[in-house]
Image 1 (spheres, rainbow, N blue to C red):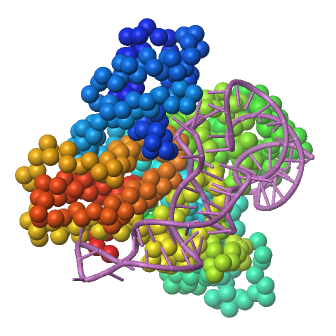
Image 2 (cartoon, protein in one colour):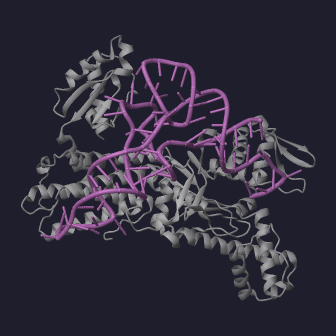
Image 3 (cartoon, rainbow, N blue to C red):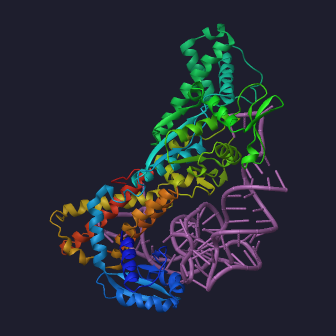
Length: 550
RNA sequence: GCGCCAAUAGCUCAGUUGGAUAGAGCAACGGAUUUCUAAUCCGUAGGUCAGGGGUUCGAAUCCCUUUUGGCGUGCCA
């Protein structure tokens, strides 16, 4: 908001002075407060164009700028930075606007209603969601919330691999457990089968419905029944887990359904039309190496079944056909190879590759008592999303997952997340919110309210702590825009943690409610209400509760 | 071998896209509570931004290279 104002002020001056300039000069907030509220490299970048020294150029701009009421201080520093300090009134007016917007503060049309398909988690429907999915869930959902808030049109989709090899193995695993119930005990459970306890539970559930009658079915019918039952139950299980995690999808895209619609064949025929396929060793290949892949890939196996690549290409074609402008795939780090194949296909089909963005979430380690918790899917020893939520709570889990850059590995300290103490950053932020609530309560008790507040009194807010807080509040829209555009929701917890810190310090140093200074108290209440509002908005966008009391 | 990702304080991580003296939290040490919530605050200490080279007014950030770690490199998904 303010930055834009400065930007246009500067441009006006440049035109007035008939100076040449490149529009992409920057206005930024310096680390060092002595360098003013804002700083621009305008003269540094554009001096050459005008054949003068940066400092000379800066001086000329300064002369005009300093006459304006909104700028209380203009300084030239270093090689030619222009450091600007704004008058408090600028901040007071901006604060007023922010308060007016209430819970919509920070929202905008920034994304221009761009249609975005955000695919995340897309875990196999062969078991409960694990912690890897949990990171994806927190990341994807928060990103979606933020993007929507700043004006993107986001459609959240979960791709369900409910067809193919893995699902067959699932059915067979269930069958083995079912047979166990009926006395057919194996010496050793096959290593490739799913070992988790949940398969046993499913077998018991199935048995309580169907009893022993499945034994007399033909093998195909029995396995079909097993498969459908398992898929339905596991799907319910996953949806349930996500619901508890406050994650909702607009669509669960079933691979089985896609296959029924014949789009696999369609995809294959498109590739064939582009002369991208050939036969070798009784298999059908895709000449993906012509399109940037390291080698060619098999599309149809010698046994006549498609590889997983085919439905995936087909699925992505549907993404293009459904009219999205941006498609974001959130994937684990073990999908690099997968992406090079997929991108090869997209190139081959002459689809716009730049519309497809891949975000890789790096692995996470769970840390317990200083040790990495070892997990093995095969042995059924995994920590599930449900376990995690039960253990540390939704709020802490989501916070910890979003708090890290997507591309960085994440060590999730279970004990830290559980601690209800100052070591835990989640509570630090929530506590600030709760604390403000209690101050507001106290103010009501003292009969100090904002009902008859006249904003002209805002000039009483002139402590540097107060102006800094206002600046921080006003930064929310920028943080959200950047988080959305960069697909980096971690910027939000970072930001709100800093805001909470500034508030806690302010609180410790200054009395907010003091009946002897009625108007000043009002001003401060006004200010901390805005802080509270920003914290509430931020937490909501992270899917974390904002408690009134702790 | 090749490809992708990473390396910043003892630990976990930020670093506003190339800006000025690299920041938080935790852990360590010392302090603050008859108070609007101490789940808080104040102070001390902690760094060859993995190493080297390059690009320029200016590099943790961009390029090259070396080292270390994770992952990938299936007619598995």
